Image 1: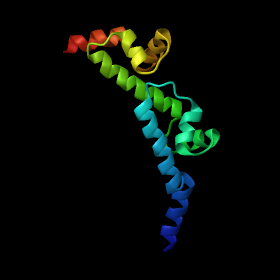
Image 2 (image 1 turned 180 degrees about the vertical axis):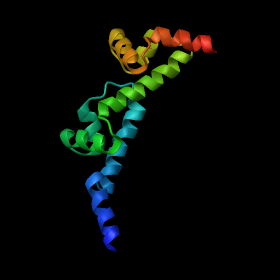
Image 3 (image 1 turned 30 degrees about the vertical axis):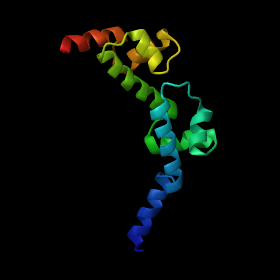
Image 4 (image 1 turned 90 degrees about the vertical axis):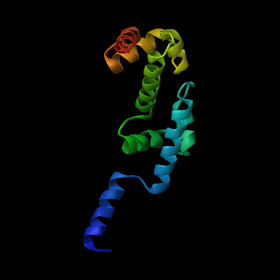
Length: 128
């Protein structure tokens, strides 16, 4: 191994986790992608990665650049947008993407998109 290869290897190791940890973190991400509509807890996500929840949060953020809950919220918002573009009501979309409260969903949706779910739906229907 050349000096430069060795230096690159050191940088990679300091930035990214070992391959087996990356695979475990990716497994938990796939779990979230599949079960986003469920009431997921941090323990559920960390269990999928086979590591402690404290270590999990740190590694997930290191790999994906955001916390597991920020990623889960992003997945839920993208699915909510798809559902609202269709014929689903705001209430049904809320519960379909895993929120337990319409007001919490509406607030999160507005924070994510800048529009309330109803405004988003109206805008999307006008654009069709």
